[in-house]
Each structure stands twice: as structure tokens, then as C-alpha cells.
Length: 284
Image 1 (cartoon, rainbow, N blue to C red):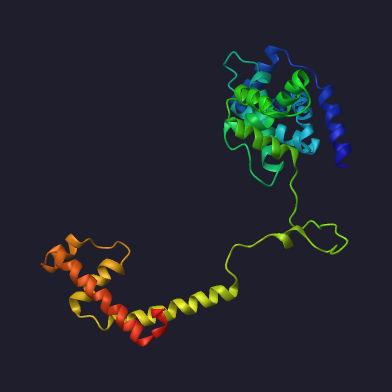
Image 2 (image 1 turned 90 degrees about the vertical axis):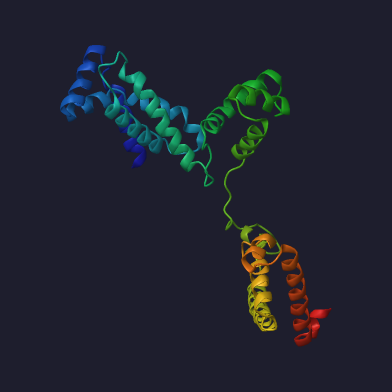
């Protein structure tokens, strides 16, 4: 049914009469100034063959011709909405850019689940790499080489590494992680079964949480052995995210930075002794 509709649209578009410059201008003015829907319909239908021709150029990207035509029609309507008939430009010239841009954006969004062509240079590389590579291979051989990558990079103003990466992407289609691996030993296996997870296991997470809570409790008990000034210095120097300087603490406590360092050293030794006394295994 969809294929029949596409063929009908193509036949209708090809039968639509061409517009002379004066008639095209008059229709554009009627749409621009009076929102005349009939004028818009005649203007766009007369240029649908342009949409179809553009869609045919992009058919090798593996997407539906019908979808490409629909996206091109969206671009055509966008061109009609933005076109200024007072400028000395034919509507077909102006609309070509919008039709191409709409189709290219659709291809980039749907060709792969991995988003590509996010910059103008990458977009140019995506749509021109195959053509340039074929042209260069005809002139210098059939095997892709660093020389071909270098020439393509120079022509499109991108790096050779970008060319190599895009070439690899275009050569390989997306593969589902749930795709079965055909194996005599385990025919039910999927690709995702062989991915290595770098995250900690639930047992490791639970153990780290319990150990962390236990160590925090031990530290609080050990801090109880310090006097007031020692506790302030340790908290400000070792237990805060910022970590106060010796000079700052000295100014706050009214002592020299060397004295702060001595008190800190003594406090840390007291903490170590308190922890080892309560938990001898920490001495190992």
C-alpha cells in the first residue's frame, strides 16, 4: 500500500506543470502576503519532482524512499514559509538547500543508533566520503590506503583519523547486542552475554558499604581521644574537602604554622595508636 502511494505521488509530481518565473513569483507573493493555501499547493507540487530527484540521490543509505520524500516535502514547506519573493532568486534554487538539509538530517538521525555528523565538517565527511573514495580508487587502485585517506581529509578539511573512523562506520552496520551468536556449543547465546562488566558486583558493593561504615565508626571512636585543639586541626586539615592550610589554622588558633604542624603530627600518632589498640589487625 505504501509503495503504491509512493508511485502515485511520483506520477502526480512528474505531471505537475513547470512554473514560469512570473507565475512562480505571483504564487509566492500570494502565499507570503495572503496565506493562500491554493497558491502554496501549486508552488510546492510544481517542485515535488525536485524532492523526488533529491531523494533518489540519497537512496544508497538504506532508508525508505517514501520516508526520504516525506522529509524532503517537510524541507520544501519550510522553504516556502521562509522564501522572500522580493529577492531576485528562483524558488527552486532556494528550496534545494532546505530539501537537502531536511533529508540529510533525517539520514543522520536514522542511519545509525550512534549519532554522527554533529559538526558541519563531519556532516560533509559522512555524505561525501563514499563518492570521493570511489573516485580516488578508480584513479589509484581498489584498496583503501593511507594515501586515499590523506587526499579525502585534504579535500574535506578534516583529519585523517576522522576519515578512517567514518570509513569504518560506513563499512559496518549496527549490530544488536541481543543478536544471537550462532554456535554449535551454545546456540542460545547473545552478544550481550560476552560483554565484560567493569562495575563492582553486588557482593563487592555491599562489602564496601559495610566496611566503610565500620571504618567511619572506628574513626569516630579514635577521634574521642584527642583534645579540643587537636580535634580542630585534624578535622580542618584531614577531614574536610578543602583542607585548611597551616597558615590559616595558625591565624585562627593564634599559634605559628610550625606549632600547628607539630600538633597535627602528634594528633595523627594518637589516632593511629588508638585505632591499633582497639583493632590490632590494622597494625599489619
